[in-house]
Image 1 (cartoon, rainbow, N blue to C red):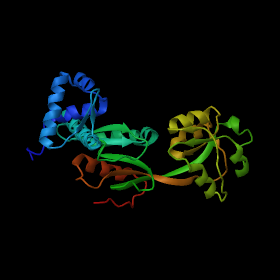
Image 2 (image 1 turned 60 degrees about the vertical axis):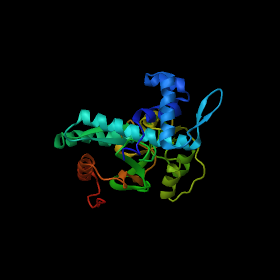
Image 3 (image 1 turned 90 degrees about the vertical axis):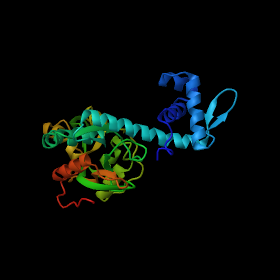
Image 4 (image 1 turned 90 degrees about the horizontal axis):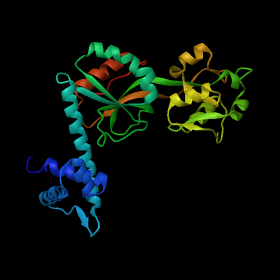
Amino acid sequence: MSRALPPIASLRALEALDRLGSATAAAEELGVTQSAVSRQLRTLEDQLGAALFLRDRRALRLTPQARDFAGHVRAGLDRIAQGALALRLAPMGGALSLAILPSFGMRWLIPRLPDFARRHPEVTIDLGTRLRPFAFSSEAFDAAIHHGAPDWPGTHHLTLMADRSRPVAAPALLPEGPVSLARLARLPLLHMQTRPRAWQHWFEAQGARQGALPGPAFDQFTTMIQAALHGLGVALLPDYLTVTERASGALVPAFDAAPVSLGAYHLVWPSDRPVSPALAAFRDWLATQAEDEDETLPR
C-alpha cells in the first residue's frame, strides 16, 4: 500500500496544476517555487511509470488520462480535508456532511435539527447546498436530500415526506378568487428550473393536458415565493413552504382543488461504503421525523 500511494506533495501539485492551469499559479497557491512544483510532478511521473504531461514551449498541459486522475486526486484530498475538519470539530462522535436542497433544508430540516442535537450532541452536521444529484465518489458528502423518485443511482434511501403542491398567488392577481383551469393556463406561471415539467404534471392530475406553459424560471423556491408574493405570477409550491403565507392570506389558492403529490423528499446515501455511526444516528433519527412510518430502512 505504501509503495502504491504517491507522495501527498506530488498529488497536491498535480491537483493544483489541473485546477489552475499553470505551474506558476500552482506554485503560488502551494507556497513553493515553480521548480519545486516541477520536481514534484517529475517524481509523480517516475513513481506512476506513466507520462502525465504534454510538454511544449509555452505551457505544461496534462494528458487526458492525467486530467481524469487529477479528478480522483481532488476528490480524495477533499475527503481527507473533510475528515480532518470533522475530527477537529467532533473528535468523539464524528461529523456528517450533508447536501441539502436549500428551501427544504431551511423550512423542514433545520427547524428539526435542535432535537437531533439534543439527542446526539456527539455528532456535528455540516450542511452544503446542492440542487441536483451528483456522484458521491467525486463530492465530499456522506448523504444528501433528494426530491423526486427514489432513483439516485448507487444509493439507498429513506423517504421523508410527500411533496404535496398547489398553485398559489398574491390576492391582487386573483381578485375574484380561484379561477378555472383554462383561465389559470393563461395567467403568468412561475417555474422551477429543477422541475421543468411540474406544471404539466399538475394539469394532467386535474385531467387537463397542457402543452408548453411559458413563464419565468427560478432556481430556488425562496425566490419563487417572493415573486409570487409580489404578484409576478402563479407559483406551484409545496404546502410545507407556504403554511405561513396561506394562513396570513398573503398567498391564496389559484384553483379550487386538493394539493397534488409531485414526488417526495428522500434522504439518500451511497451504497458502496459502510454507514458511519454519525450517518446511522442521523438516518435513524430522521426515520422518526418522516411522515411515512411504514418506510423500511435499507440495510
